[in-house]
Amino acid sequence: MPARFITIEGIDGAGKSTHIEAMARRLRERGDTVLSTREPGGTELAEKLRGLVLHSTMDPLTEALLVFAARRDHLQQVIVPALARGETVLCDRFTDATFAYQGAGRGFDAGVLSQLEQWVHGHLQPDLTLWFDLPAAMAAQRRAAAREPDRFEQQALEFFDRVRAGYKARADAAPHRIVRIDASLSKDEVWSQIVAALESRQW
Image (cartoon, rainbow, N blue to C red; front, side, top):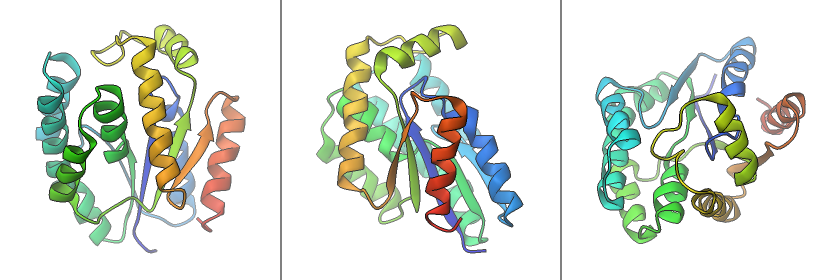
């Protein structure tokens, strides 16, 4: 099977994690060797950096640098080797999240983020990105019922409105790669959209 790099994006509370394991199971049933991972994280170093990003106060540049440092290690240690082996990599968030959260959400310079993106992974982009799109207010209700909030999840609704707009801008700029999933629908309806996106690529 050819290597595939699939990422799952969306604001906190959009329901990504509910479907990632089901996606992995479906792809394995079709013959793929699947590696499921996440960002920030995926390696021992990147998980340590994830803890800092989620729970320590810092300015937007420091935040972006830590996210990209974690991504660099993740790519070198996990993602690139798995793709080289012909595996399917299923990653909960990738660089689109950085442009949405640090760029649109924090208001950080997208030009700097683009330069960091080029340094860290160059032309490597996901083959498919599923964007779980959900209004910020609905996502907040889901988060409140699910877990204690981290530093990002404590942000006001206006922050998540900006993040959502950031994701939309990324999707508009790369419609061949990013597929919008209406995450406001029922679990079964969301899954049907995911299956349709995979089947459209004969996956």
